[in-house]
Length: 87
Image (cartoon, rainbow, N blue to C red; front, side):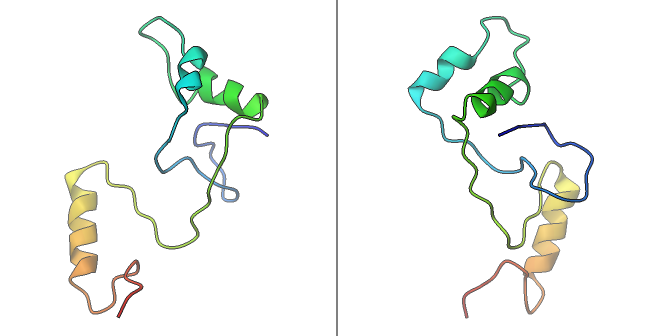
C-alpha cells in the first residue's frame, strides 16, 4: 500500500476525510513541531500496512473557506441537493 498526499491525478482516491487513530499511532509522530501528518507518519503507516481507507463514492465537497460553505448552502436550497438521499 502507498500513501501520497493529494497527488495531481485524475484517478484513484484522495485524502479528503477524517482520521480515526489507535493510541499506538502516536509512536509514528516525530517529536519536533515540524511533523507533517500527511507526509512521513501516514506514509510509514501505509508502508507498514497499518492504514485503512473507507472509500466514499457519493457526493463530496471540501469546505476550506467561506465560499465553499456558501456553495453548499446554495446547493441545499435547490430542490435536489446532491447529498440528500432521504425523501
